[in-house]
Length: 349
Image 1 (cartoon, rainbow, N blue to C red):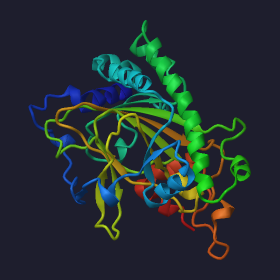
Image 2: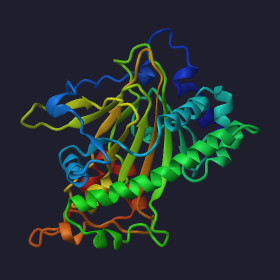
Image 3: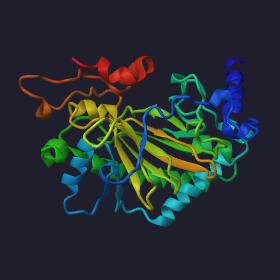
């Protein structure tokens, strides 16, 4: 059966499930990892770190979005113990035997469940990672993993989701305020349908130790398709962001250090469109580690599926007009499926 073959393919391509004999197999070996140099993440190449209690929050968020498209935040209200619980339950999932994890494998037409990372089909090489997506409630797939013991996993995922809903809305509004929109204008935006809530999903990522991290890649370079992404990473660094050539150096990769009790926030393609290019979506990737097992939890935010995202009138030059044509999130995802990293260019007017 085709689906059974797909499950067997997932089995063979997960890092923990093939005999690598202290080396990276050709199926997972990437040859172009160092086309751009890696910069020291200090000085001008230090990713902004912003305390949400800062009195100049709006200004600092706006500057970080314009100059970087990514920043880290503290002061988000989640305790160290809470994030430790999130991390522990994520590890508990990925440490299950592969036979158990495949019971919750993604099925055709269902984005939720266990499997390869969503961007895998765009590349000929496999990535040194595995993932688990939660698009709605975690219960349906968690019960397949732990028929009698899924409560602690579901509870922490649901609680984290609620906190992220509030935090992502606050950050979204802060970004708009930084560009001169008023509170009234931000509240009148019709991006989220009748519920007035963002469309969201969570993606849990596992990057096991790799015998030769200079040949493998945890997550290939890409931008996120939605409005914004919030990412928790355990104490192991691996996330890198691409900085384009500027006065400080050539195009280069910059490490995003795993700061204690912090979250990473980055701009997605639909935010890039909504703000007419004022904030640019950022190319990023995940590297792997020879010793440590890195995990991350991504929270992805976007508009309601029926809403057409178009550059805000307030941010459109009266003479030049909008840079991008209107598009829904599903339409844009289909466009990404065809053009991948050139999808934004396909929307230019």
